[in-house]
Length: 346
Image (cartoon, rainbow, N blue to C red; front, side):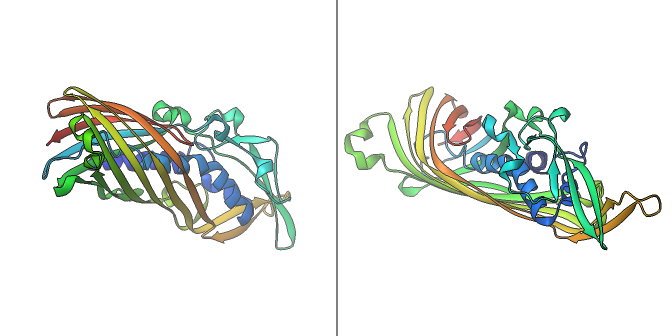
């Protein structure tokens, strides 16, 4: 479980903070605070939305409820595919101030390409101590090529337990794990209620109908200080995600194979805060030792993200005794592929 939890943290980090081979996400801070928040949000938005859609996926692979005290353990991976139009962003759409200028019309978002030729160079201008100064920085590239199926991944380990009256309770739990650089925790809970009996004659068929509701919360803390390209103190980023989904699901269960599907609604929010102090060094255009001047900013980034919409899922599961293999496809704003293994004991 601990290794799987660390995988979750690694993937969240890859999607939300970008590796330091670029100038680093913190270099965006050279723009004024309002512009820096706009640029950061545009860059991270598809990654955050992909995480929300992924966290709402993979909760079920059958509509049939466990017998009382039956249970299963499933290990899965959800991959939310970012539409091509969201793999980059347009500077003109951000409403940047005149102190932030750019040479390219677009730049890759976090879920876009890592092609350095596509990364835009931005020039930030400021007035410090009465003189006009500037700093050029390169927007970070995307991580698309580093992700499974070129999609935003969300792994899950889930325990499902059968209760009386055809209720199933589902738990996703990762206690706080990680290192001094990145650590986090995850908690998710879902409830499924089979309602096949309400439809009379359906009880004689291998058809099952259920209602499902699920909620997930994830917190991640990342220590920027150790790899920051900008001097300062107490530099860190905090990330919180909350998502929920409600769905009606149906499955046709045969001895070896079953088919399942669902339709419903999913939504969620996430926030990102970049905390600490950052000492920004601007260029004055004057000869040494007056060639640079410093400006310090504190707790500069505070962003909120959201995603929501109707979702429809279709999938299949292969049963080999207590061992199950499942895969499904969800149509939503960011279409999502889910798959995994389950060990089920009715």
